[in-house]
Image 1 (tube, rainbow, N blue to C red):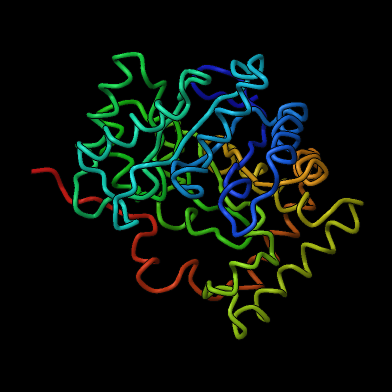
Image 2 (image 1 turned 90 degrees about the vertical axis):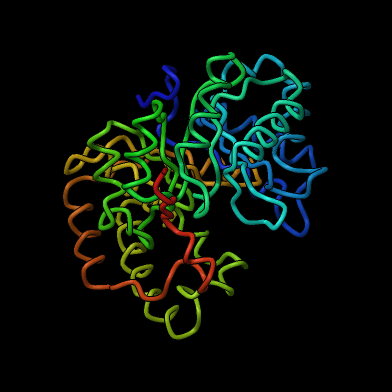
Length: 323
């Protein structure tokens, strides 16, 4: 069983973003049902964001309300929160903003839940990563924060951060549709340093997610090509009697320990009890299944970037060298 902060967690985690960050968020009652179901099905690693929704209604307010109603669940959950965004909606890893962000997270949680992990959502291209890591280390020594996670960072940034303080996990996009970390050194570096990988969007943004219309990988010309891989995954799912999503999540988990990789924990998000239950159904892929999917990946080259130009520049970011 995977571990974070010295505690056992399920092989699949739970992403909170969709519960508050959308045009028409689900009701609090529905969100609570999804969260309770996640725990009941073994997904006790939860990942939220200070900016997952407006300032008055993001992951932290929802978590405060949930743990107020279910205080007995607080100790069961290992919680990671992304923050560190600036007033211009871009990354700001300055010492002052790092303190502002962590303090705000603690204020909104209001003691209902420990802040187990904190991570800057993106690497700040203007601030050496050592600066924010040292600030977060101060909070750990003060007993206000459990540990440090990184997000969307380069292999170089991971190594530099790990020299300053223990890095508990690295969160990156990883799925059958997004395998960049296998080529850019991120996965290899995490394996060498024994840092677990938190895989967001393991369902490739749900295949039919509305936000995909804005992403290059899902524009018309690229979409038709990339749907060929969906067809290949459907064949495996049909043979195993499960959903395409089950296969996609199982493939991510199956990469754990493969070719020197670390533990990989997918964190699919969901807003309904049924979808949470489906995501946490543990389908096991055998060697033949994995071989078939690996061959499909070679045949069906994914086309298009993960994000539009400009936003894409922040992907797997590297901070400037410390002087």
